[in-house]
Amino acid sequence: MKYIKQFAIITFISLIGEALNHLIPLPVPASIYGVVILFCCLEFKIIPLSAVKETGLFLVSIMQIMFIPATVGLIDTWDVFAPNWLAYTVIIILSTFMVMLISGKVTQGIIRLGKKKEAKKNA
Amino acid sequence: MREFLANSMFFGVFLTLLAYCIGLFVQKKLKHMLFNPLLIAIILVIVALLMLDIDYDTYYDGAKYVSYLLTPATVCLAIPLYEQFELLKKNYKAVLCGIASGILTCLVSVFLLALLFRLDHATYVTLLPKSITTAIGMGISEELGGYVSITIAAIILSGILGNIFAASFCRLFKITEPIAVGVAIGTSSHAIGTTKALEIGAVEGAMSSLSIVVAGLLTVVGAPIFANFIA
Image (cartoon, rainbow over the protein chains, first blue to last red):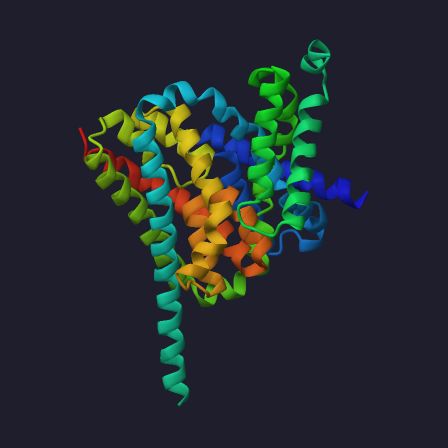
């Protein structure tokens, strides 16, 4: 019963997300509205963590599998990809790693700066 | 046989799960980053479809049920985020600056590389939303007049790259703070990368989950501005 209730709550929030996606003319999908709604419900104690925890974490843990069918679908995209494949490949690879490097380094730099300041204060 | 498999309700789901289980098994036996269960599963399914001469649409007819829960699963990323919220509050400046700098890097790097490859406007805007979650990226690409199917391909490939290489990449470039690793993965490779971040650790997973949302929303604002730079 517990899992059914949890799943019902999660699907209900997904449903609200769908409704917002339908009503608000922005390219924001149901899942993004849903994350924000569930987070706010938990943070403002509207629902307790125990009301979604096990089923929610189970869904998160099997999420990787859900990307397989769409990715296999790339074999059908090859015809449109082919004429510019070199540009696409280079841009996708370079840009992905640059984003990873810069966002990681900036975050880490600011965290370490904060830690240094704190250490000085305590010294 | 082929006829039967093509019409089967369960073939697509079974093939997907079997391929992933083989992927997990191979990873356990050969501990190397290239033996990534997601990558192995994708390759095995493609090979199986080619060998059995089953076309993608037929496979997807069954396999789509695997993806059916993607929205509820994404919604549940709020749980790891909630569990790490205190840590996030303490570091919100670093996290937000990190994600914003990442999205700016994405837009600028796509712009510069598009100039280098002399891409036309449509091809350029197709790639602008490449590092954010598929549903938002599709919407942006469509609105700006890009090729949506290529945008989806670019997004998925960025995600897979992150899933396979993020852990080694962060180690190589000495990104060691768990919060920074999470931001790096989520900002560069959205939900597909986030599944890897969750395996690395709770903090990494939570920050990566947050990055999907923030990076997606920042791209909604930033991509239309950058779209004007190549006419």
